[in-house]
Image (cartoon, rainbow, N blue to C red; front, side):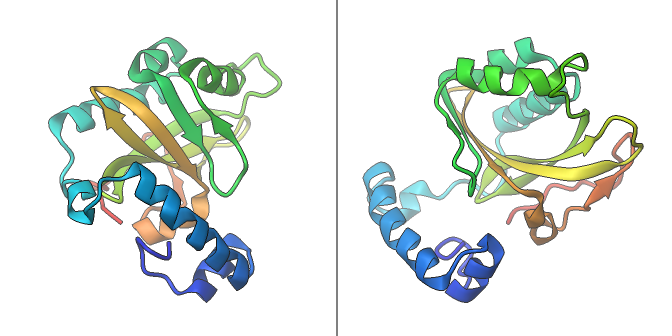
Length: 191
């Protein structure tokens, strides 16, 4: 938020429910870590403003698999060493099997961990394909904002999913609720 969105430390701290000192400290630790993993020049890691045809297809397949609770289709899209993170929560899954094990109970209507039916709207975040996930809890009729998944795609597979909490939806001009089925103009925006 500080480097990419250019938010002031105080606003970032308020959004993340952290102190300004904690936000600044996290930023100081993050910058050297990013330098180790990103190309040397920032222009070399700037993604295209428009999604590729392949990214659009993968994003649609991912949305369809989640909406149909199709773990087989989801497994086929994930790279073997795919990662799933959910900042600011301390959850980190580091391979396809771990990700599928984590989400499987929430997709199974017979499981006590079942959370409901999904619908999605496509978007972009930091130049990467993303989707806004809306959840219809059992016994309700409205799909409510649940998660913003940002995908990193490599070699035709999802290599990383970074899941953000729904309080970011307004920054992407995304609605907080949708009806079944989702409708409206093209909702793909880039933030």
